[in-house]
Length: 405
Ligand code: PA5
Image 1 (cartoon, rainbow, N blue to C red):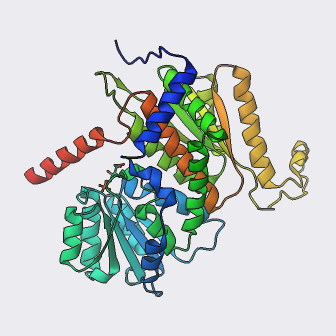
Image 2 (cartoon, rainbow, N blue to C red):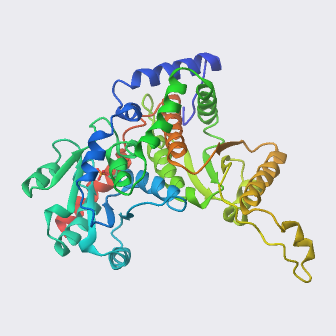
């Protein structure tokens, strides 16, 4: 029997069992506790970084960078942040050189983040930057307790902070991994956690979002062979890196061999940004193979009054309908129109998440919503949501190749 899940009981029982499994999982999986943590140690440490530092650079990859990147880029356009935050997460030499020409290395503080403490990309970049700035005070290391990176940091007398051993890389955005870089830039990390805490409380108290999340998870699990491509269509450029974070979370957590069978299965994440992807990928969703579900994300109040001027263009008078229209209204009308068009197809599953505003609290809620949803789907499709043997396999081969070269 291949790649097929059979649900032999009724939906209510399946959802109840999945909920109970998640409740129990809280004992061993660390991310569930993160919204309730005391942020004082992180904020206190952030204050020790010299006021002359104007730039923070995260050196890390995957789960060690994508979460903070998603939150920072969500807030950056609307919030006056105290420092710039850059992410050095590639071995592409052009990108590394380009990033370094944009910053003053003497005024930067570098956060070297690696859970395992041995990731090749991270240390290739760190070695290069350290050769330019060999000063231990310019670096903070974030890693698992007792990792080789912690031992190294102690050797050079640099500061080390930990993420809990039970928090996986792609679930670490609300740990020191995400919170320290954000706090150093003036992001209100308590508000971020407040948003996560609210949805966590509602979910475990079996409030409204509990049913929504369980129904969604059950849908993805039941229909994973037909609707195995799950698009996130966000109508705001501020969510571009949230989509990247989602792609990692969903793909790396849900593409696996099943725990109790030899079958490989998985759900494929796609991140899209409206309206521009309306003019490209949308055609494939609308008329292509019926293998995609779509979740739209809208921002209810952009808190922005930018408006299309009352100008008539000769020969283009039909576009006067745009006159005096706020852009915020236009973009949401575009989203509504695409949803309506997809609905008329009748066989494309869609849903919509509305974020009230662009702020810390609401991105915190959205992050935790997706973490919970991922855990529920993983439970229902019978995979280990928290490991990543496929990613590890590539890392091992690269290390062997490097030994031989
Ligand atoms: O989610 C994961 O576990 C991975 O994407 C890791 O975050 C990524 O491979 C980086 O690993 P590390 O933090 O150990 O350097």
